[in-house]
Length: 348
Image (cartoon, rainbow, N blue to C red; front, side, top):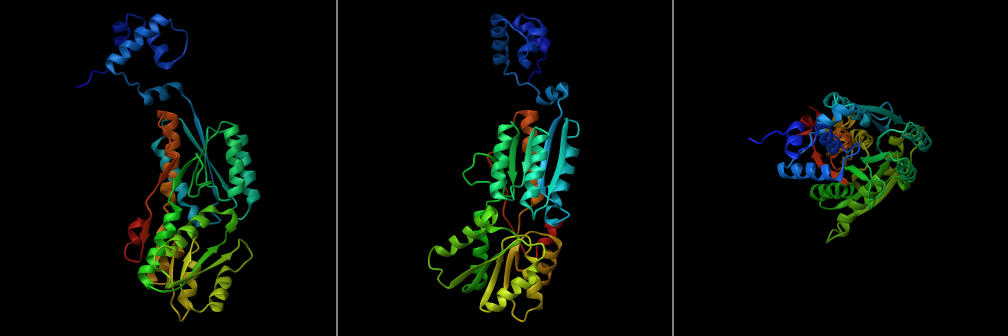
């Protein structure tokens, strides 16, 4: 068994006081050059590894982490974020971790920026953010860096080339996976890429999914498919179902619909009432979507696992502060394909 060396052991081996060893280990106070060399020589010889848990319990530091995300009261897709926070708090409750929730109105860039401003003014140690609005999120990220606030993003990237930390799925490849599924199910036909309830120009997550989807059909001999695009802009007063229904009525030859957001159930609602059953593929295991999946009105859902994204994002930040563990610049989670036969295992 490896010997566990105490500060007293190291002091005796180096011929210095325990106080000198403590100052070297914790890099505080004055230590002579001669004593520093003696202690470091012993530390190298015994391959000493400090205990980060003991270190952080001793310094009584409280780390404040803020979560900036769309309000779950507005969109149930974000509800699992709160479950992830609860699990993190339970797992790290003895380590001086404080997590604060900052939900914002997903329909309002003003709400996003004002809520972010409150976070920055409170000067937390770190911010985990859903950069729902591309341009505003870039500004917020720059402000955090100026204020020395560590920032990570999840579910959506600010910039594909950004050095900032990101956790989530490869959105480009999730679009390609959706395209592959259509190719397998239909072999030919007219497909529609539908963006619902987002400003497409300011939403990189939809842009990346669309880009991946189109790239699949641009490769090889896939001329059997014709692809159209339809954007339903964010409007709290709009009837999204009627808008999509009107579009499909105007384009009756559409055989398959790819919804790039969690509002896939809107296409499912239409499929349930239509004589023509279209192939529907979209995102996320919210209740309305899984009902349609079970009833055959939605064929496949891509599970983005927002709970896992939130949990891992917070854990990365926490372990950076507690254990000096490096945060990966990009941490991708699996792209799960869910259908009527396997969806229950994802709900447990």
